[in-house]
Image 1: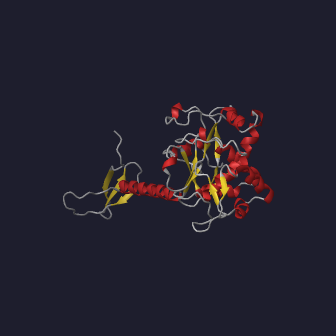
Image 2: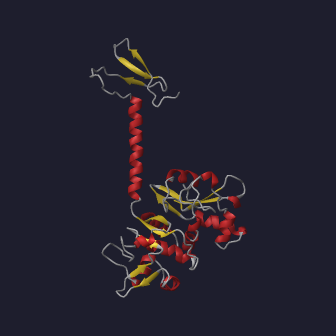
Length: 304
């Protein structure tokens, strides 16, 4: 039976000094030893055990830092497809929801500084003409201008903070605020629609594995029925002959994660048929499940 720790050592007395050293039988590493007297019941740890403990604590620290980084988040209604507006508008709405004041449906630059309509072109980095198209597309459906000039975002579709009882029955997806903003910052205005395509398919996104599929509530990876790249093309209004253009566009949507360049979403195929590729969304952007590390491995998001 394999041992949990590599704790077998050969103890050798050096002739020239009389010093006793321990030799790790697995690695050949020579370790100094110290003879001590300890009360009965004292627990002693070998060097290998100490290294294992240190490595485990380092992993726990990394996980804690990751959790802390992702504390700032908002929620989006994952049961709705947002097909009643342009995909560009969908991408911009998801960005705006990161400006929701905590426990409020009002947009704010800070907890004390509310955003107004005249602020939005600057926040969204849109020209007056492009902003006007966006405003006409979403006004009255997803956001409204209140009497005091502040902007209210529909709490049927977007939330931040405590969830009202009236919204408890809705399936919500978690968006990480800093990551969404970083992603939006690096994307040209003309590429916002590629964010929108993914968010319009939220009802197809598996909560556990962040894969677009036809049975998004399935929790067993072996039983998930993926949405293929060809099906994704059709959903986005592309022909299958245009799939290469779609892949190229998503390959250019990258952002920094802990010093690494990663993709917003990835197309993964174990076969030569590109049209059957699976689509994963980076869990650093949005994720509500419990298999974060597995999704990272499956999705292969690191830019090569």
